[in-house]
Image (cartoon, rainbow, N blue to C red; front, side):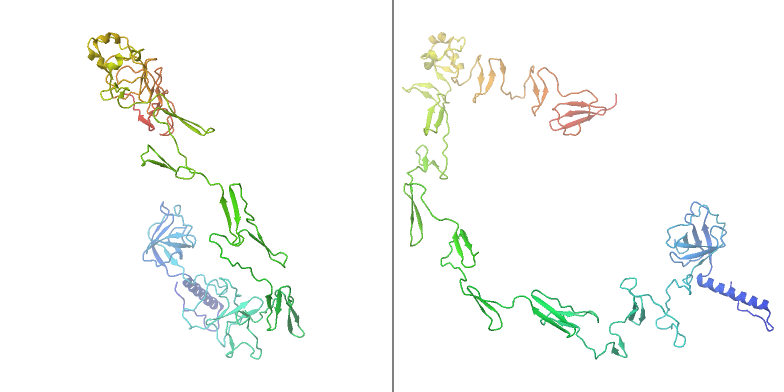
Length: 588
């Protein structure tokens, strides 16, 4: 609607109907002006997404660029959608032509148009609210600022404002700028009717102060630190210290400072006092120090073994709290004190006798057993066929032959006759023939007629006439035979370290068997590498359990090696390194 500039109340005589018509037109003009200030011009709508599943939020598309701002308020009319026409909404921009509708300026609640009337086709307008839509000159809710600096006046000398009110100033962020600003100078109105003018404020060019009433702003103490007044009504506070008292006389306007502590120093025993120069000098006229005229030996701690007592105030007592006297502890010791030097000499009257420091082994002079400390111990060890026994009470060491010893090398009689041949590993026949008592108990068995047959038993040089006599002869247990034995062996067999290898009493091999090719019937218990029993002596295979048993809780769960567990999915086998499992397939 355009402004009506053809308002005519009529010519005299004035007719009331014409006056009323004129005022109606004026009111209409004000309505148009208000609407113009509040909203911009109409913009045509090309499409409204309403009444469909895609209408949440409602989408509006203009025919030209809308030039709206995010969150700006608009007025919609003439779309044919009763839920939208003649109502205000807020916009959330999509692009230069389209926007969504919201019910709040914060754009948190969208306009859900899925149940609205459907948009027919074309038509409808929207108006954007301008920056003046919320201006209320009676109750301002917005800031009012001129659009140019130092150009417009707020009142004048002839047309002043009646009253001008500003909020009180406070030292908070919200109230820090309250007051009247004259250029960059801020006049602050504070509570209690106080006006705070800017620092350096003047009256007719002079600072606001009476030049005839001067005072001290600061008080300096001993040409150093200062006590500075913070404001015009600040108070200097004088505080009494230790041994100092102050008396204030308001009538005389005076402060009397009095020393309430020490007023005089009086000389005592061993002390003199002098105050001739204005200073009090206290001098010790007695003992001032204890000094040593002998240098302290290295490693000695100062004051060690000495106690000092001056509790009486008159005398200083020094007491030796360490060694008082040295006395001999036995008749073998003598103590001598040189009074001139103060040196104490302790002498051993019965020195120790001679002792061996080293032991020469085999008298070679090269292999020596040397004591490493003064309390060293010499160890005597038993050798082949040697036994040792000590008697601490008698202080004796007995070395004896045990009667049993290994002999390495050939053995000869006193007349140099060869008894045992270590080179060929046999006993000469001449020795056996002359000593029948040596060959009893274990029979050799039947001998052939040739002397060479005895070589298989480690016996050589056999006389034919003596072969028959050897048919029932034997070797004593414990006697050693060397060489190759061809024939039957009766009796147990032992290793060099006396370990039983073949038990002839129970008829079994008890020693370890190391072979890659052991064949035949295996009788006995079977063990794993970690000594776990897998098959017992009765032939039972250990460790197996029925199907459906619980599977191992972990790969390292403890169980005998070889144990087997079965469930519906796997077969579990305990190895020496842990459990393994094999998946079970379907029925074939």
